[in-house]
Length: 109
Length: 257
Image 1 (tube, rainbow over the protein chains, first blue to last red):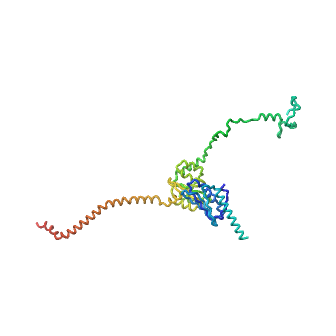
Image 2 (tube, helix red, strand yellow):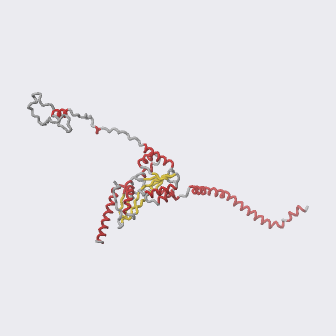
């Protein structure tokens, strides 16, 4: 299911996925990292850096997305499913894409 | 199908469900033929009614179905996992995000040069093996797609160097010499000096104190000896000055008588 969701990463600058693998609530965050690292999604934006920060301090799993226009999306993956995280990111990316397209259309009518 | 003649009771009786029995078709037809009413009623009366149990089935505990036979392939894989955990000193668990095939082959090649093997195992096979062995604390790592890097030696520095060049493989944890380490622990382990050097350092540090003890013990006696030596020299010098006039006399007296 999570493999079918396609996210366009064009408006994204960087994604940092932080988790502690010895905890029990990291499955969805790890799955999210796997889905984000797939070829298809990576191909939408080669400049987007996906970093995995593996710690051992009992902290909650966290996904920190920095967008190109300065926005920041922080998702705490402890109680979220992979699909929810992907759809949240996908919807935000789509709205930003639309805005960018509209802006470019206004500039070049 | 026989003619409706017969007893006088049937003659003139009007049946509620009038079913016309056309006698034009034969007994055995290719199409469905309407049954004679009497036959139809008999069939309905003698229909089979399944016996219903006194206690409905859903109120009873369901009987345990036939146990699934253990797959021989799964057994083989489990045995392989046990062998791997028994024979290798260093086992590293990494998360595997999909990688292009060429990169995978290159990474395997570089790791093979340092005698590190890359193994893929399914979680459903590894988890029962681990839960029964003493590596229970590695269980939470085996969620999602993982790879195992196993080696009979503990070359952590080289392994970290290779993995740094591959961003799609994230080191989660390791078990080196029966010690479970996190990522930070593996990095610290890689920074340690090799075993021989650290053994030499330890031996040197331990040997330092006894060597000092020897000199400490002899220090007092040596000091006393030095002091006495100096005192004797001083006395000799002092006596030598006073005895030089008296010196020749003792030499002459044995010669005089």
